[in-house]
Image (cartoon, rainbow, N blue to C red):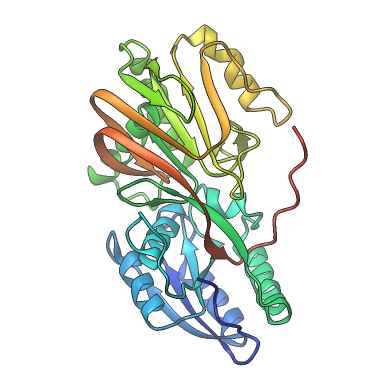
Length: 335
């Protein structure tokens, strides 16, 4: 899957833009395209319907493009990755373009996790520098992904309360609100009543992990491929501090929705130095796979997009799955 060397000719790149993402604009796109056109052979494509980025990425891979640059949010990134790699289950043997990101969404979790600046101008400057470095090293950063059975996951998936929050936000958008993108405020407004409502329900999930007995009575499960994978506005939330794109998956699940029991846990999640531990918490930052089953269909999300109601999901870590245009991760410090 390694890309062909770019040092022997002009880099061929496709810039995929989601014009409906929170922080994309016509003027910003013009500046971005102008900055890139002098350095790469650039084609600009705009998405106009859900799943369009998958289609564009598929064509880019078939055409032998070197780099696909995403200017949009995390949902657009997920579509591009799924378009490039095809259905999960096994990695394609053909050459796949590297993925670069210039943030254009509200959260931009994938970009942040790769160390890409939130500001599009700074991110563009970094991208240009990294393309220049590639001409010398002929090596991209390589990251692992999540095989979620139905599709690839890039940084997070979940069953239960976060799936319900994502479903609520998407329902709000479908009811005719013309707000561009989805803000952190909208997520928080949806999360509070959803969490309070779920606290009154009986748990329905069973969690299975390698070499462990099944854990029953689980209320919700977060699966992560990096840390942090979620934010409270600009503040990172650490559910699995030692999980990285170069490790296995992180799992975070609770057997209690008691407000009092979870207040201390939330406080530790907001502190990078805090020990994320609790008697009712099942957590591991490096697992090869996990399976979640439910007594009844339950809301499920992947990378912030609502998947639907599911009774069973299997998540597998797939190392070295994708080339990305990003600074190489520093060695991990011992916990």
